Length: 350
Image (cartoon, rainbow, N blue to C red):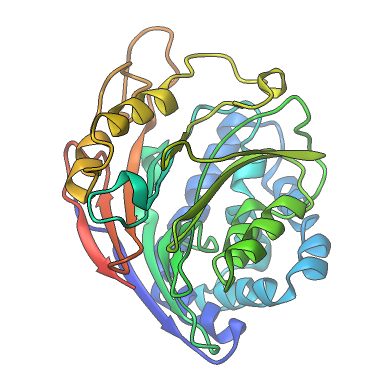
């Protein structure tokens, strides 16, 4: 599989940052709009116009909480030459596609006490629809304040996950609670982009905890100084999990208050990844993590996920679309396009 497009932007304003991003990713952004236009036509009784209106209902909340991120979004739309309503659909696709939802993603934070070189790693296998693979981009942002950010996203979306030059990193995975609804909140893409501009771990954590939300999301937050927390956020509350002996993993179900979970099905990828990592406790390094992320136990709902036509599974258009390993000490993200068992991790410097 070909490596993802690499996009570098450097600007004095959020709007100009967005314009540069939109211009470089223009073809993929237009393709992404068509992917979701086709997908929603097949999976919902709402018209495209109604979906746009729903996505736009989030704008007032964003404007109040993080106007600079909204400014960047306007720049992306203008740079790509698409309507702002279309860009908002791209950025609200998590909220729009939340009902029903297939499992997405496995994450982990590994702290110095568990690693060979006493460093911190943040890890994710991103599981989603294979149709988005051609539209995934690696985004490297240099902000006016000197902050550098590197990570992954679908073209046209705000930066979904990655890390910055202040040693703050964020990865995410889907969870679905009994409290999820169609009210407006801060879309997860905008929330993640805000966090990836933070200069301190505590600042990032507090933003994630207190954000207004309409749907649930799990967020694995780590810093290069050896700190990590997992935040199971849902409308009306959050649960937090701490590392144990330097290892913290999560997948697509609530761990703290399991009665909040509205998704049925296997719930084993987090414990499987934890087990694989603990076997190498004290010796964990990047090659070791790469091997763990290739694991196929419990296929087809394995850490490394593939298409499946097995009867009874709704995974025909579902697979690991990317794998990400962040090495804070080396200021490097190792990124694999597609399932890691079939691809190559390529290092990208912050």
